[in-house]
Image 1 (tube, rainbow, N blue to C red):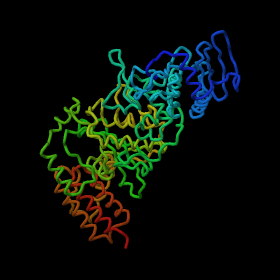
Image 2 (tube, helix red, strand yellow; image 1 turned 120 degrees about the vertical axis):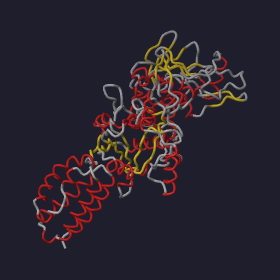
Image 3 (cartoon, rainbow, N blue to C red; image 1 turned 180 degrees about the horizontal axis):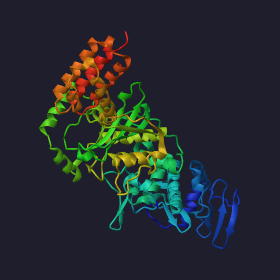
Image 4 (cartoon, helix red, strand yellow; image 1 turned 45 degrees about the horizontal axis):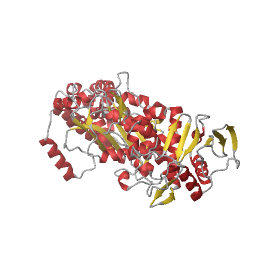
Length: 555
C-alpha cells in the first residue's frame, strides 16, 4: 500500500480539480455500465480489464486523462496483470485540499502519507496519484510516476493471487526470513530495495520493485537479481533496458565477453579435511581462442588479510604475496578449526583457469568434471554483475565449511541469476559440490569430458606399468636395469629417477634394434611415472617422457 498525508476530501476541492485538469469521465462515453444502485455505478472501459466504481454522493470520478493513464499502464504491463478476473475494481478518492499551499510530498516512504489504499475487492487511487499542490498551484504528476503508483497497487493484487512474495525464489534476493515470529531481511546478503518502503516486508518489497522493473531503464544495473526474477516470473519490462551498466559493474569481468558458463566439480581428496566433499568453481569461458585464458571464480575461506594468488600476478607480486603468506602461516588444523567455527572470511576471487587447472590436476592430482549451463544472455549478464560485485567487495561475510562454503555460494549465486532454485541441498540440508553438480542436470547444455587428475590417471595406468615391467625384464637389452627399484617408485625417489634415466639412455642408443610395439610400451612406461604424487619424480618423468618421445620419433 502506498502512503501519503491523509486530508479529508471536500466537495470544493473535487470540483476544483475537475475544472483545472479535465472534466470527469462520462460514464455514457465509450463505457459499459455493469451494475448500478442508488449509491454507486460499476462500469467498464475498453482497455482496462477491471471495472471502475463511481460513488454518486462523492462525485470524485476519474478524469479523462486519468482513465487514459490507467489504459496506458495496462498496455505497458504483461498479460498476467489482466488475469485476476473479478478479484477487484478501481475507485478514486479525492484528498487534495486547494486551501493548502503545498499539499505534496517529497518522500513516498514517509509512513504518514497515503497515496492509495488496498481495501476489500478494490484498489482506491487517491487524486495524489495524478496531481499535487505546490506554491498554491495545482500541478499534474509526471505520467511515469502515476503509472508506477498504479502498478504498485496492481502488483499487490497479483501477489494476493499467486503469492509471489512468499516464494523462496523471491525472498532469497533480499534474504527474507522469519525469526521469533517476525520477518526481516538479511542485511549482509540483501541486494537492496528500490525504495525504503520495500524493507517493511516481502509484499512491499515486491510491489516497490515492480515500479522500478517496469518503468526504469537502468533498473537492471541497481537490482540485477530482482530484474531477472521479474523477467522470468512476471514478464518483460515496459521500457527498453539499458545495454550497458556503469563501468564498475563490468569490472574485472566484462559480461559481453563471456561466451559460456560452466560449473566445475573437483573430485574429493583426503589430503585436506576441508576437501573431503570435493570443491566447486565457476568457469567463465571467455571470447578468446585459448581455453586456458578463461576465468575461474572461486569462493573459499581465507584468513583476514592473508594474500591469495590469482594467477595474474607479476613475478614481483607473486614473491611479495608468498613472503606475506609465510609470515602469517597457520597450521592446517588451525585453518580447519577456524573454517568450522565460522572464523574465516568468505573470499570470492577471479582466478586464472590455467593456474587452477595446474594446481588441481597436476599438483593435487584431482579430476575436473564440468557442466556447461544453458543460460540465456540475460542470465549470464546478471550472473557476471553479481560476481563482479562480490569480487570487488571487501567483505562477503564469514566462511563456514558446512553452511557457507564454496558450493553454497555458487549454488545460490546461479540460482539468483536464473531466477529459480535449480541447485539443491543434500538430504542433510547442506550444499555439497557433488550434489550441486547433479542438481544442475535440468539446465545443462553440455557435459564436457572429465579432465583426469594425476591420481585417477595413475590408478588407470598402474596395471599397464606392471605388465610392461614384466615385458622389459625379459628383454636382454635391459638386463642391466634394476627393475626392483621401479616396483615401488616412492621408496627411493632418486634411485627411481636414475633407473628411468638408464632406460631412456639404453633406448636412445639402441632405437634401431627395438620393435615398434616395444617402442610404444617404453613411451607408455615412462609416461606412467609422470602421474606420481611426488613432484620431483613427476617433473623428471615428464622430462624423460619428452626425451624418449623425440628419440623414438620416426625419422
